[in-house]
Length: 258
Length: 213
Image 1: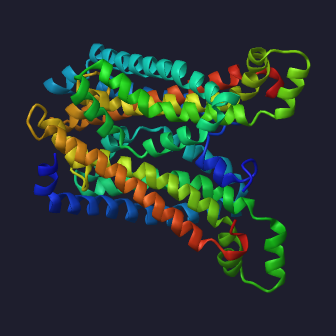
Image 2 (image 1 turned 90 degrees about the vertical axis):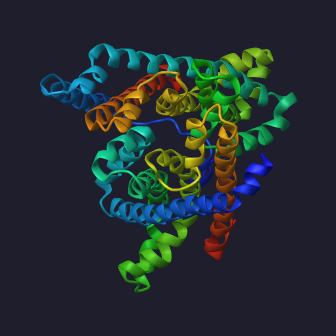
Image 3 (image 1 turned 135 degrees about the vertical axis):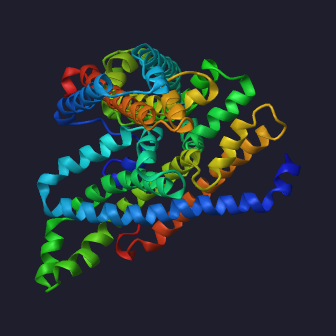
């Protein structure tokens, strides 16, 4: 099977770069509509003691901030580890290793994220650190896989031409291979961001904060208003992060490729 | 650890069965829904961007958030699990089914029509077999994801091994906390890898002979 033309391998493998402007405009509109509706409800609804304490603006802003910090810190750590590893695994000396590493990472993807979070917390203790490591492990694969695929699909004749022009290996990487691979690498980063912002809702189980707390409180105290508010805010946050990823993807794509 | 497993072997096996059963049923449901929607998309071309946007946005929504939205509507238990797993399972299959069905050459469809095949016959005997490998690839992605989503659904008392993970979490500090979480997590990994192997086999066997690689 040829890797390039077969959609099944493309789907099973790397995330594809996003196309089209529809979602770029549509996503913020959807989010604004949901948030607007929710704010209106929050301002007018009659809340009991528990609800008004859980849904106080201060609490919600704190939880949102924790959620975003968790997401960004994890994604940043994944970026500075997975991208260099992906680059290393496509260098001639280590190329042989890329297939087993990606295979192992793919198999690791079968692990349920909630199990990883709980086990890791039992091992290294509850809190922010365990959350960052377990979410990072989970988001590592898409970035690694897309970095490898992105670099592999660079036309080898271009690399050769660049070498022929007298560029060093590092220069070829920096000025030819990476710019050409950026759209696919960024698609991986966006996928990672979305995975992390979603799974960060489980951080509350191991006392690492985040908006998941609202869902858990809503369920344990039978307050549907708290439960739904938490779910909506997490969903909106995820959509906005996805949107930011799409915008970033567009900005990062070199002019010659778009 | 071994003592824990051997003492609870029957319960573990039963939960593993429940977990697999939930995922497989949801996958069957998801495949039917996805192919039906994809078929509609191939007939009404204007719907393609809509279908793609729905898969993209749907996969962005965190499963825990969607579970939170489902609970007030359908209560806790098995129903939210089935809905949750089916929802996420449908999206990758839908995306691949649209790509696969759209990818069938119109020339082939026209020849089939010329041979006197009915619209349904054309779909069943030409379009679907040609798109099948791509649809199966989507199905395998869905299966992997569904195993994890089913674990999350256990938080709302859904069936399956996910409950072991949450039991481990609530008993933290107790001597059985770690075994519970390990059995839940490792059990799901094993089930996911097994299901993937089976689906790969099914995909090979059900792919029409003419297009087998």
